[in-house]
Length: 183
Image (cartoon, rainbow, N blue to C red):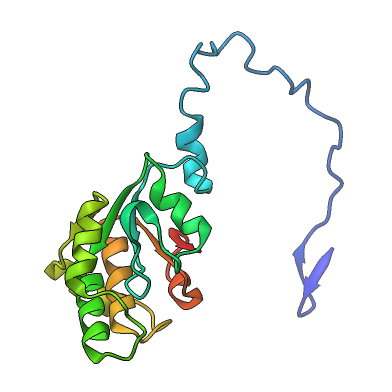
């Protein structure tokens, strides 16, 4: 007996530890395994890892523009591999172009590529351009304050609203969702 404030609160009783019967094969004959049971293995793996995925990928690499077919001295090999995968559709936010234009115009040397050149690279690589919609801007307001960079916050909002996977090198950006890929 377990008491609380001097009153019985619970009674302990022994449980029957004997198994109620054979559990293995309980559904035998009730289910037919289809011949194509492995047909969706890649799709299932995509739910847990990047391996073999064909997601929509938002490339959050405005500070490190990726040239033709993912070639860039700035992008890590993992990022290049994901971008180059024939199963990946790469989307580049209008905010990537905007951030590139601002950084290049400042002339500090951290953005060697102009926004015009970046757009040509993106188009030459068959990347899709993602406009900033009102719903993306509204979604920024709902984001936790993990990161204060306005461009990174709009990248996150776009990826969550669309939905698509966002690729980033920033560990703070990766905190927003498990669908964000830290490279």
